[in-house]
Length: 312
Length: 312
Image (cartoon, rainbow over all chains, first blue to last red; front, side):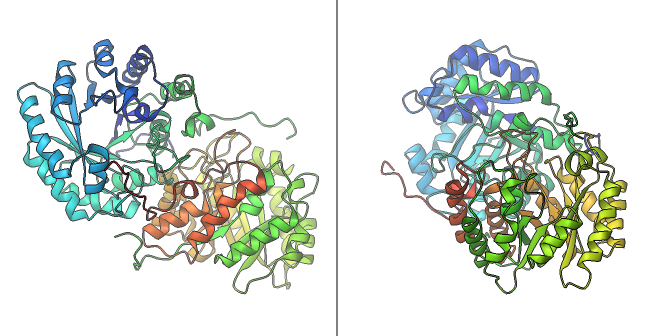
């Protein structure tokens, strides 16, 4: 019953460990190690990798080498290399680095966007229109993220209507892809099901991404709820990297290899080499100096059998 | 949308931390601390608590005080105090300790039952019929667990037909409750949905319990799948206690307070005081000497808001 092919729709994973994971690590991962990891991830089958972020090196020193990382990558045909860009200047740097796609971000919560971006969400979205002018004609595709779409750590729950208005603004600017992000892991499966169903009335499934954090242990339950409601694209981070500054000790993004293992066992195609991912996850502590939250890399796949104890 | 009452069916949780959690701890938790915890758990609203196990003190020294724990409890009306019993001798000790219910256990996997119980599953189930003779007329209710129902760490996947035949044998013996246990965390949501749907054709929902481990991060996703298929009773351990000897570093049982938080956010009643549970979970490291895997006790509830950073 497990691991067999079914007619279930494939699930597409965008790997975000080198962006959403590394950005909060106190250690600077060497540029050559970042490049080697990204090349290994593309070899493992990812069609989308969020490589880095063209933010201020002062704000996020861990990602100050974004341009060098893009310059050093071995670009695998069929892999889209994405960069997060916070503003028009970042977009110019990203285009100069020959990114395939830029990912813009604004929070639906006013206070979160001011804390994170230093401006109102409306001002952020005005910046998006300038970024779209920069990008137009370059052949670079665009995605925009609604941060705190499932709740804000300062304001609490965000009204679904407000989230949907922000999605509509993104689409009106000509942005192709939309990500709904549970930035600090506040989402629950019922809420996810409702918001995904609403979003799919205006964003096609192939352009809608769900970004969940496992802060309260619900990451994969939320994926299951979103998939059940028709979502097909998910962000995930190798090893479950990517903590939350408001939840010390809590886990980060949903874990790529745990999600791929779940999909495999359920007969849902991801196109990814799970054994390769487990190997890469087990190597992460060497890069960042600490254990990571992912479970399958510790426990092994369900099909990894153990010898019967001698006493039996 | 979150946390509001709906007409969703309530979800009943049996707390198993003091049995399935403590049994693998190398530290002996003092009898008075066990009793205080169980009394605090019953005060938090549990209608069912698996208190301890009447196994050989040599096999499981951590639970050698099962009789003293039962003797010291303050029995809350409405709470059923359960003990695991492995054999007829254990059942006699359990009855002498005035348990409300005995939980019997046999693996569906031959090799796992031999490793765990030193006999074939058939021999274990023969022992059940002798236990039923001991229990008959005592007023003590009975439950029996199908261990490794979702896979065996030595043999791999177990055929659903074989699991169902074992459930039928339990029912034929007059056992009232049946637990399907994912003993080492191998289950996936699709498999859970199928097996729960089959089990519910012969076991009423109020007598069927699902016991999941979070070994590979799918614990709450499996709960969601089981609930969707009609299951209403779940085992869970405070703090996510209860490791797996084959997965060092992996988490244990599904975490009670994480499950209660998910249910609360989804508008599903559990009858439990979540804030009290979080407080008790945060006290576990004092009892067992190490951190526990539960996430909500670290991250706080989604509704626990944070002050806006001063820079905003």
